[in-house]
Image (cartoon, rainbow, N blue to C red; front, side):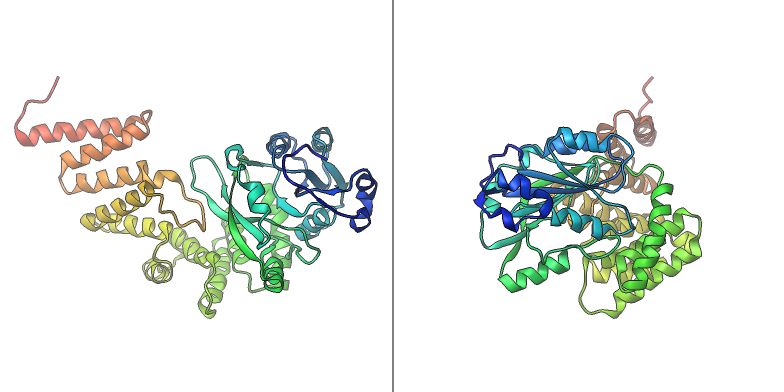
Length: 402
């Protein structure tokens, strides 16, 4: 068992999985927190993940689905418990196998290319000691330079709480049922995760995920997120018509149900962003989406860009300034990640462009200057700032500087 300051409570070893009863006989204490992972060929990232768990997890359980690199060696050296499982094309099967082997009172499920942020762990023991809580959402930063969004990663270890779905496996339904039975609450933890991986060439993942999505949607044709993922894969494969049909199917599902879910925004975003390739009426889609998700930063950004592209520069400036203000106040809609540049350099660039087209060279120079301060290596902003300054001088009749 890993060294950890987290509290423990007694448990009989007879209640533990057979694989771990031998270890349990050596200790009558039940771990407070088990970190649960599924892994395949993750030697590039795994050591960093496990190192970040040292002060958090009492136990680490890893289900390996067929690594041919040093992943298992790295896991063993970190003191993790490892179980081999033949990959059958079912993410929930692998996730749930790891849960079956976990002995902790609580589960933190984490991927090999994620890290626990060290400065976010100080309140974890208090959170896990709260008897009214059955689960917590955590903030996940999906990549550097992006805002975080809430994900459900921390929950009590109970046999009824298991993942569902062969892809985009989901713990929410089971935890909601458990919460209803026990009158427990699902809160938000101070724990923060950082994703260290990168998308890179998606061809291999798309090849793996495409048949899984097809199988999954046969079983659950009402899963909006999976339809949108399928659409994205078709776009990657240069197949716009199947992509359009997948997004429209998702959109029909969204329009047909009363309760609104966070992922319901995805078909709107997919169709609007790819409207030129898909032949969609993006104006009406954007208006409809904004009526459903008025606080969405992504939709507000798309609206601001449309105003600018259509020559409504005054309205566009006001819209971009509202986005800047949301960044300054950290008023993020944390259902998805946003490129932090939307609130800074990208917005300043657009505001400067609008002022320039209105002939306001002084204001344009100011915002190009702000953009240049954020990205001093971008020559473009310095050149445009200098152009605005020269045009200002010409307009005022002042001689241009040498």
